[in-house]
Image (tube, rainbow, N blue to C red; front, side):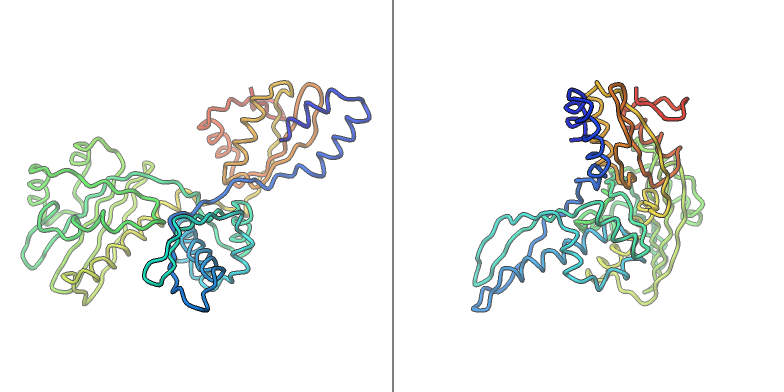
Length: 358
């Protein structure tokens, strides 16, 4: 760690002090050891004469990279990654673990955990002009409301195939964890009274019943084999509207229903990713100092810098027996940096030219 070198060097002679400074200037540029972990990757392969374990491992790497991409990259940008070579993927991997290896009916089956180097992965996306997002999980209340225009009915809890299937079709790479409302007669009554005005209806009173100020209202209109999806998404005090139609789709077939649910979820995943997108083209240089004798605070600050995706890099610019001065390259604005600092319980004084951690 940086600080161990600092404390050690401060106790040595003047010559060794400057030798250590020189060493730090050339070697402490931080590439961050933190990772993107992708687990529960199950791969199976026929156990035959030409069986090669390396082939199985490569398949796990490819699948892990695909899941990571779906987790942190907008769906319309994922096409740029479709033909990524296995050699490129391997360059992004720090380590991997094989779990639960077994042989069943002449097949080899194993579960993999793959750890991608976070900094190398973000740089890889940057070179392809892709802005990834911070993979933050989030619980969100959702109302999938099914309106059958042929029957003139509004269904939320009962006779609603979307309600029944919504939770069952969770993908490993999904960041949103959906919470379905408990059955409530008053909610159904309110929806039926406003069947002709559901898109403009104020859902705040309904949502309050479930102690949430963030939600997704999904209106699925069915008329014969035509489907219209209208979504009202309220996250982080922002409300967005999304609408689109599909023709000639038979949702009585489970495969079609599942595909439609996945398409809707991709829209919501993209919306959430946009809230956490990393713009690597923005590189803000920030100088921060900490008292050099506060070992614990230095370690905690370095741990924060390593774990935050918006920190492109950091290094120790200089130090003496009073202060350690860090230079940080941040992918965002000063306001964003200070908000992140505050959210992590770090006190910072910005009144001086070099900001100080208290």
